[in-house]
Image (cartoon, rainbow, N blue to C red; front, side, top):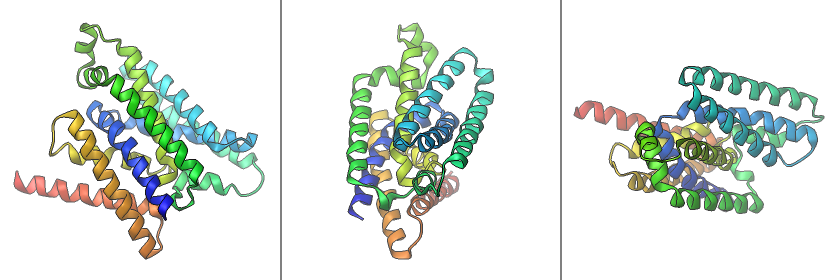
Length: 258
């Protein structure tokens, strides 16, 4: 349970920081494509007998680059490509899983989340990925801000939009990998987008929105873990349902007040 709480807190940092860019830039669908395309990497890694994390990182980064290049070249084909990568990645994963002998319990934990099974090695890796994400955002904060708000204006100001956008999608891919074992691939988009979406109602400054999103993510993961422990229900589902409930209540209150 201690490791589960730590894993949730580490995931909250990643999803709070990168999820803010995802919500502001409106690339939630792209994030979904990246996360589900990584299923192919899990299947290939299981078939080859290598750590599943390697396959997840490889396929996530590869899909991020492909989606980024196509979206920058042709916005019209973006949705089609994301849907194709989404489906193809999962199909590849399923095929290789079928060729892997025995019951792949590790694969199911990545798909559905298994935060109670997180090891200290996983925590160290999550900490390293968080450090990479925070350092990169700190170094390129202004560039990410410019590209997220208005990429055409950023290009006129001399910002290398291509490189910055691809770097941002690469960070999204790493964030997805961090959160996979917390809530699983199927639910990862909820934890990536709901905390920033809620915090956006109350703050406008991007840095403040990131901090608020991290605290909201921490609240959702801790409370979801506790409810999961008390009720003996899947932790990932509890975390996401709490986040969705808070979002729904917030939407209702905003609609009523307006």
